[in-house]
Figure 1 (cartoon, rainbow, N blue to C red):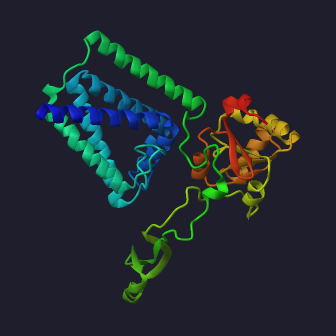
Figure 2: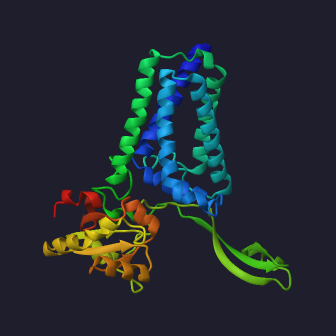
Figure 3: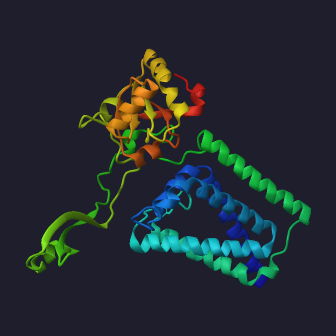
Length: 366
């Protein structure tokens, strides 16, 4: 019975790690954004790690896949099980911290393929930790499936293949798009909130400075504010989050006006998406003016979309000779639309028909 439970745990943990790693390897940039969120000031306050988020993301996802394979074939059992234990303990801590302090809404465990709440992610990690502990205490029952030379070929081959996949998706686009802005989806439909959708329960909170310290008071506690307290701020605290549509915070603002309806109702539209013009790929930006001219000649309504400041937009347009207009949209939304910076999105009446990395402009069919 002990052997059966151990072998089941071996298969369950190994397969789950491989699936989780491959889903994130399909979109390592998306996972790096999640890591950057953990490193940010409101969470762990380790901003010095943010520039290395992508490198750390690639290392972790490849490690997940390779450890899963190592477990399944019984390669270096002691090292593999110890590594799995340390990794799952770290993940369990992160998901508990996210859930308890409500700081990161989605751990990104399965990328955009499967969204889990913080508490669901924590529960998943507890279950995984249980099975990893079974493996930890029964390491002697994990036997290698092949002779050592074949094991080495499988593992080293897996590392090379994973690294190759990472290079491809970073220089092109994810093989599978799980995001709400994937080809075939309508942006208008993605923004719709059903009539019977659950509403958010929001409580107004008032912040007052009391003896030099900021303290929060609800509406029912306003009568308890000490004399001499100074009002600082008012904010909305979400008690229960209601339905959030797949696409939200999508705007196309320019001069305090939102033009998204004009573009989403047009027959032929091209979005040139560059969420950060300062850090965008320079060779990619240099191609955008010619693309704009070609698209305009074929009847396309073209718009640049960015979260950069007006000054940064002006500097980029001057440097790269871009004459098309840029519209403001939230950076997180733009990163969700497409990972490449810059990238191209083609729409017909709000439905996405094509997407392209700046390295693959020749694939566009205008």
